[in-house]
Length: 174
Image (tube, rainbow, N blue to C red; front, side, top):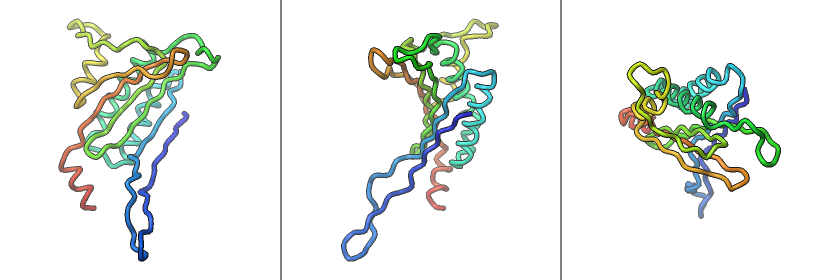
């Protein structure tokens, strides 16, 4: 499992007369995971999401975050992964990224396809077409955006989870 995690500490700079002043170059916590194509890829994506959410002390949204990440990764692997190498010869890659915002958690999955995701209501007993309805039900909002250029095109599908306001306030006090 390849994880790429990056957290930036708050920057500070010395002002005049030796006083400390904070510089407004603070980046939110960010973590990314390259999704493998083996049989454990969804398990690994769920574990990555759970571990990151717990590390960021966001346990109230952990179960929903894990479910959303799992659904978005499954969609990317099923509908968005190219079977052929990219124009530069590199294999197509799917990435799962999480970023912590002041009152929300953002889950983003990047895949190398420009096919737009479609929210299709599933038939009552159908086993498929349930991923995006689940994402819509569990998230504060979701969407997608194309990225890249003509040679290296793809899309990012995102979902935002609200962090309970009492959790945000308690974290500010500590």
